[in-house]
Amino acid sequence: MVPFDQKGITMSFMNPRVIKTNIKAFKELENQSDSGFGRRIPVYKQLKEWRSDSRTRSTYISQKRKSLATALREFKDLYEVDEFFAEFGKNDDTFEVFYRKKISGGS
Image (cartoon, rainbow, N blue to C red):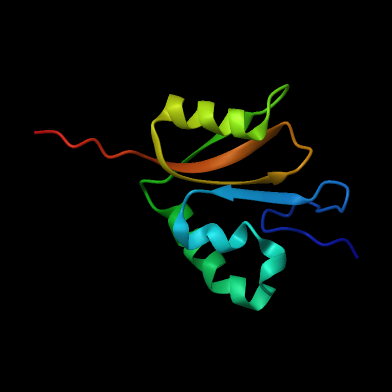
């Protein structure tokens, strides 16, 4: 039987899932081998709530012919991102990112 991730996309040992985020509550998900699945369930519930919040937006990033760090840096600068969460296959050239914009304080 082939395992599936939350979106129903087939996972493979040839294309392992990578998670990148700057949200402290979700940092535990970046190092998936460090904790058991049972300990990550509450974090996934928080992530589901965060994604469904009205302030959270999503877009797709292409990292074709550039590193992941460069693609994320360009994305954060372009969209003025405060918080972000990305989950993708290690060999994917395009992936979805969930983010919230910086709140601009006006006087």
